[in-house]
Amino acid sequence: MTKKAAAYDAEAVANRLITQVAGVKENDVVFINGGVRDLELLEDLTTDTRKVGAWPLLMISSDRMANKYYEEVPEKYDTQAPDFDLKLATLPTVSIGIDANEAEALLADIPPARLATVAKTGQPVGDLYLKRNVRSVSVGNDLYPTEWRAKRFGISLDELTKTFWAAVNTDYSGEQATGEKLKTTMSAGKELHITSPEGTDLKVKIEGRPFFVSDGIISAEDVQKGGPAVSVYLPAGELYSTPVAGTAEGKVVVPLTYSKGKEITNLTLTFAAGKMTAMTGTGPGFDSFKKAYDATNDAGKDLLSYIDFGINPNLKIWPASKLGNWVQAGMVSIGTGNNT
Image 1 (cartoon, rainbow, N blue to C red):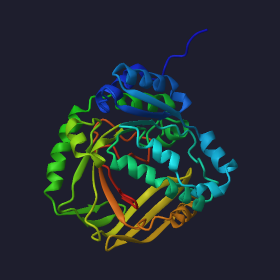
Image 2: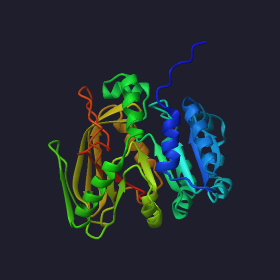
Image 3: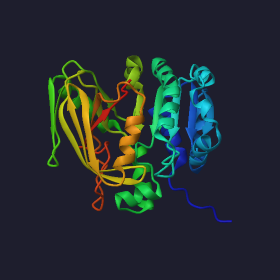
C-alpha cells in the first residue's frame, strides 16, 4: 500500500516546538492537546518531550466530542466545580495545543447562555495556568488549514496548508527584532488614534501600559517575566497591550466578518469611557452574534480590553480574499471582555 505524503514535516515541527519555541527542559511536565488529523505530530511531540527528559501527557480533542457534550451531558453538570481540572492544572509547566476544530459552525445550534455558563465554570482553570506561569504554545491562530477556511481566503486547501506549516516552522529571529523595536516605540507613547477608510475612529490611552510580543519563541527573559510573556501563538507575529482603563472613545467598524459560518457586514462597535455602549451590524450572522454577546456572563464584557498589531511580513492577504488575519504586518485588531 502506498503511504500518502504528509502535508508537512511533523518531525521538524515537533522538534522546533519542543526545543526552541517552548524550550522544554528535563523534568518539565508537558500537556499536549490536538486532534486525530495531527496524530503523527502529537506522537512526535510526545516522543520529543521524553527525549529531553520531560514528561508528556497527551489529550485528544474533536468536533464530535465537543458536540456530544452538549447533546448528551445533562445541563446540571455545566456548573459542576472543575475540581479535577484544577488538580490537573497544578501539574504542567508547559502546554502545547494544536487546533483541532474542523467545522466552521461548530456548536452553532447550542444556546448561547449554555456556552457562556460552561466557559465561566472553566475560567478558574485558565486563571490557574496563568498564575503558575505555564509556558503556553497554541498552534492555529485562526489560520489552521481547513476546507472552509481555504474557501474563505479564496485559495486551495493545499496552498493554505503549505503556507500555514511553513509559517509555523519559520525562523522567528527577524520578528523578535521587529517586535522589540516596535515595543520600545509603543511603550514611549501616550495615546493611540486608530482610523480606517470604512469609518473606524478610535482613541485610547496607552501611557504606562506594558506591551508584549508574540514572536514565536518563549525566551529565558520571557520566563522571568511570566504572565502573557510565556504565551505564544503560531504562526507568530503580534505586538499587543491593554489600554488604560476607561479611556477608549470612538468607534470601530469591521466591514466584513463571520459568526458561526454566517456573514456579518458593517459591524460597528461604539465606545465611551472605555466601555462598548452600542453594537450594530447587518447580514445573516449578526443576530446570533449579538445574542451570544448578550448571553455572556462576564461582567466586564463591554470593556475595550486589548489592542493587537500584526508584525509578520511573510503572511500576505491572498488576492482573492476579503479577509485578513491579525498576524499579518499592518493589521490592527481590538478586543473586548476578559483580558487576564
